[in-house]
Each structure stands twice: as structure tokens, then as C-alpha cells.
Length: 370
Image (tube, rainbow, N blue to C red):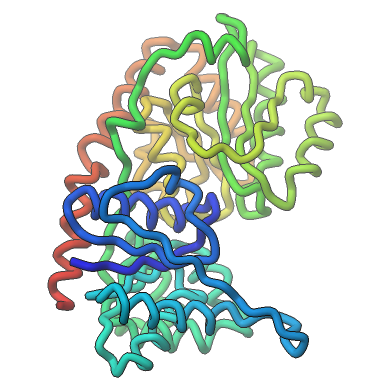
């Protein structure tokens, strides 16, 4: 097949899933065309059968806000005509699903569209007054709808209509790339042999509650030697640096910024903390689990579909930093318990969320549209 993919090129989960999906499709002989304003950040090298088409938004004095959604629709039409696209796969409802619909209309409805919902396009952005009507329109005019968890499937129907036909297709992980492997040299750069290494990866937005990570870490390191790695960039990063200083743990916290690959960080971590107020799936948690790293996360959204409390990780009240610290300490102080959780986390990724298990679901959906 000849497949177009529209996605955000940033480090968020929707862009990561879209990029990994495109790479896997190309590896299996399909032609994949990414269409976005910047090369997706995980598209770190050239792959056979994989192409990137940059959307250029014209500057004009009349435009206070350049109309990216229109430029994207025009680019989809251009790529479809010149590359012979069979279908377009839009990741994230706003604006990609809307632009894909416009492009299909301009092409005389000859371009089937798939829209994958990733979370905040439904739980936050799509429900705002400014975007709710257009999101609802886009969902009802997609050729096929998918969502990354049962939670998001139910939430979409709750907000946009119980009659919506939605196929739940879970996110996936490359279990060969995200795998347990020792890296003592890298680990020694961040922590002494007797210290636990905790990790959090996010976009530092309010929904991620990075302050809970730092609060929990302050309690953990007071009772057990530990260091904290925070990877990512976002609006609350500077505030989190100030919080670490206020709690007196700034010397034990490393702010690493955006990382093109987190596999090395996952491989040296002991625990992954994810205290979000909402997570439609939790891709970073799955990547950590695939590396054999137990996750302590909020009991929200789609995370209970991934993390079985007391078996491969712990689920806590998203508002309770102390619960996160207590759960973390329980694992760090009991090597046998930790080993059992680590092996169970890895097994969850391998048994349920591998590429060979998930990719055929997308291919079957594509083929049904064609």
C-alpha cells in the first residue's frame, strides 16, 4: 500500500506512535509518506520506502495566525496526486483529521481516511468550545476511527456520541529495542552503586504533574539513597527546577531536556514514575516496562489496562505524592519483590503489546477501507 501519515512531529505520544507505525509499515514493504511541518523527531535516519513531505505555511500580513490546517490539506492533495496515495492516516483529531477530510473532498472523495485518537484531542482540546463542533464533524466523517485504549474509546463515545464506530488498537513497543540491558558506564554517570535511579519522561505540561514526581522523590531519598532523572521539555520545566530547590533535592535531580532516544535512560532506571491526571494509554510507561522497569503511576485513564496493580507495577491516587513514595520504597527495599515486578513488566510488553501483535490490526483496517 501507499500510505500517507499526518502527525505532530514533537516528542508527544501521538507523534511517536505515528512515526514508529510508519517505520514498521515501510519495513514490511509499504510506501509511507509523512506529511507535517517538521520531520518527526523519531525519524532519525532514512529508511527504504519512507518519505517526508514538509508543509510550508505562507506568511501574509493579513494572517495573524497562519492557517496551518489549510496548508496541510493542500499538501495532502499534492502528495496524494503525485505519490498515488491509497489512504491517509491522521494521528490526533485537531487539525489532522479535519485536514484529511478537506483533502479527501478536494480529491472527489477518492482518498480513504483513518483517524487515530490519542487522548488529549478528545479529553482536553476536543471538548473546548472552540474545537468541539469541528472535532465532532471530523470524527463523524472519518472513513475509520481508532483509539489507543478502551478508556479513550468509551470517553470518545461519551463526549461525541454513543453511536460512533471506533476500533480500539493499543499502542505498541519494539521489545527488541526497548529491552533490559546492563549499561553500568552510563548509570555510573548519574548514581552511585547503592543509589536507586528514578526516571520520568514527559512534556512538562500541567497534566503530567511533574511536581508530584519531585515531591515523591524528596520523600524517597530521605529514606533510601536515590537520584531522579527528568527527561523532556515543556512549560513547567523552570517551575520544577525551582520546586527541586525549595525541597532541597536539586543536587540529586538531573533535568536532561528532550532526548531523541530514551532507550538508554530506560535501561539504567530502577523505577518509572507517572503521576498524570489523565493518560489515555501511557506509551512511556509501556516503553519502561518493556525494559523491565516497574512503573508507579496514577490510577487514571487507560493506565489500568497496562499496569496490573501489585503485579507488574503500582497504581496510586494521582493527588497523593506520599502514595507514590511509599509504593516506590516498597519495591526498592525488597529485591525479591522488585525482581518479580520487573519480570512481570517485561512479560506484559512481550505478551500483549509487541509490533507483530498490533500492526496486523492496522493493516486489516486499511485493507477493509480499500
